[in-house]
Structure formats: structure tokens, C-alpha cells
Image (cartoon, rainbow, N blue to C red; front, side, top):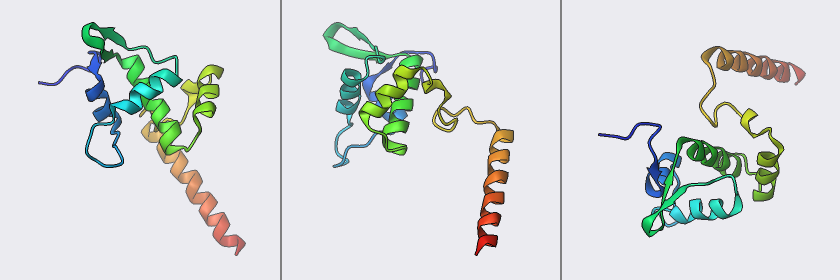
Amino acid sequence: MSKSDDAYKTIGEVVKILDLKSRSGQKTPTHTIRFWEKEFKQIKPKILSGNRRYYNKTNIDLLKKIKFLLKDQGMTINGVKKLLNSGYSYQLDEISNKTITTNNLKHKITNISKIIKELKNIK
């Protein structure tokens, strides 16, 4: 039985959702999420007895966005902080938060195909 999307998740479950990997491949890199908590004040997990952290859907979506910007887009921590504080962070690449629609994807692929054809004609 798995938890619903709205249920609080432990830090270990969040690591799996984000597909974070340690360099050595040995341990679950929960330290990464703890570090991001210190750097990004927007991440506010519930901390219950024994200092156990529990993350809601909003926190997990924010962590997905941070991971996308840092790991996939190569942004710096300061760059991500500026973006998150600017208010434009919710308009990021649709793929990062899995909201891209089929029609929108087809449109993007068509545009990319046109650009490739134009570039081939330049030669």
C-alpha cells in the first residue's frame, strides 16, 4: 500500500521521489535535502518528535523545482534563490513539474523541427 500524493512524506521518501543519488551510491543522500532546507527558507517541513522531518506536497514540488534548476539546468544556489524570491518560479519549464500538455509538446517539437530544417538550409 502506498501513500497518497497529499500525504506527508519522510525525508527518505522524498529522496526517492526526487531520485537523488550520492556520489558513492552507498547511502541515501538525505543530507542534500537538509542542506537545501538551510539554503532555501521556502522549504518548511513539519518537524515532529525526534527531529523527524515530514514534507507535504507543496514542499516536495518546491524541492523538485530546486533540483531541476540546480541539477538539470546548472543554476547556482544564489541564482535559484533569486528566481524563487522573484515570484516567477512557478512559470518554469513545464517538464520540471510535469504539467506539459500533449498539444503543447507537439507544438514545441514542430518548432524545433522547423529550426533544424532552417539550420540545414544555411549550410
